[in-house]
Length: 311
Ligand SMILES: NC(=O)C1=CN([C@@H]2O[C@H](COP(=O)(O)OP(=O)(O)OC[C@H]3O[C@@H](n4cnc5c(N)ncnc54)[C@H](O)[C@@H]3O)[C@@H](O)[C@H]2O)C=CC1
Ligand SMILES: O=C([O-])CC(=O)C(=O)O
Image (cartoon, rainbow, N blue to C red; front, top):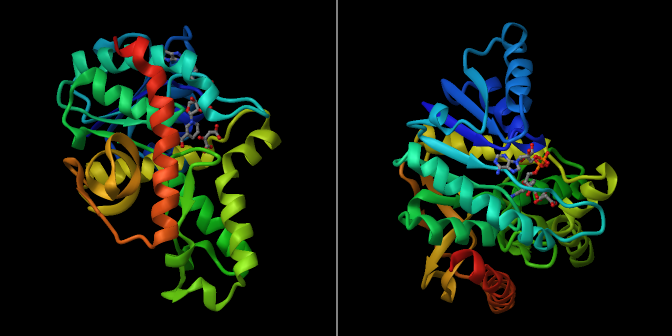
């Protein structure tokens, strides 16, 4: 199985590393516009093969889309990341043009690919990719919820002082500092509601830390995070290529689900060989419904800025 990753920067290269290390695909092509950069990242990753024992063939190319031909999955990470103090939304001016051009290029050489959108503001970039390519909604997947949910589980595990893998929890809504909705009511420690162990105040703190999880890392690192984003994309790609049917929160085009239309936003989805195979429309309580509607309003406002790119 072949995966192309456009953008060989922090997230793209980390994703290639995670996919090859875990043997998720037989071939990974990294593509970047920076001369020689993707080639260098691919060579560095390939030189891990003997010491970590993987057999994936990772190669790098400078803007040569012919080498990406017939990819099963294409991951778009090209674009600029935010700096401390910025929001993801501020990246739209530069990233929208990049994502649209890249989506057209990849599709010309891989007409059957499933596209995973990572570049920020991710929900709006997912919507743009869907509208610009005209592909069916199952083949355009925005990655954000997988990462936000893993951060939610991390912060819950810290508060519980228990391992992250014993905690299950999901974040839905937009992939933004104020639009994420950590579903605290449904989070569990080995099947037991976390509210059995943590006070309302503690749970509110965990939810707040989760929502600004990306901003916290950007403040510490000077640019946004890459290890967990790369691993989250690899987790999603694994479920597609190996038809695992995992339930993962992804940004997907909604047609009535969660009371929304004409928007891409994070909701639980079943992910398999056809991409988004099912949108899981769970019953939210009134507060969650209100938060989802507010989050969708914010994402929709952002989408309005795409008019000139989509014209
Ligand atoms: N959805 C999510 O959960 C996450 C999204 N992101 C987003 O992913 C994007 C990438 O982040 P990083 O890898 O940290 O940035 P980075 O700056 O390290 O890498 C971006 C790469 O894209 C390349 N690029 C720019 N224009 C291109 C084009 N037209 N074609 C091919 N390559 C091109 C650049 O040369 C650069 O190497 C950012 O927009 C960031 O905000 C980052 C983390 C998580
Ligand atoms: O915080 C950012 O800008 C990058 C991102 O989306 C994340 O790490 O969640």
